[in-house]
Length: 152
Image 1 (cartoon, helix red, strand yellow):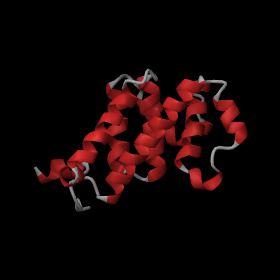
Image 2 (image 1 turned 180 degrees about the vertical axis):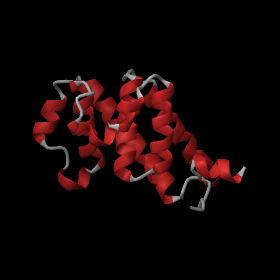
Image 3 (image 1 turned 60 degrees about the horizontal axis):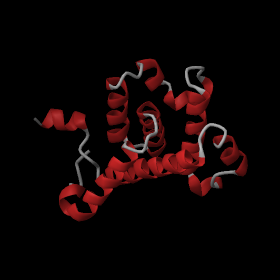
């Protein structure tokens, strides 16, 4: 797939702000392992191969097992995730697919059993952030690392 545009070059001022928010999410205090898994799940839902590849690699680089990374898309059927991670996956799916049914009250209440209100705000921003990256990468056909390697 041919890259449509380099969105960093096309709009550097706003992309600087996107990066700043991304850095704030990374420094929010949520576990990096959880952030990796949430980013991976949202990217799978959104069909963003660039982000699926990146977040899979980052998760494994930071110590996540291949098996847990490979099974994120089937998390409901896998016993490998904690209750907190499972709550994060369910919440990630609802927020990413928000036009479907929003975030149902039962899911919201279940999420609060595993996340404080502050953590749930941080998790929601993290989900929003990965959705921004997914939309940028999918819309503009971000140059996938495999394509960059072939071109080199």
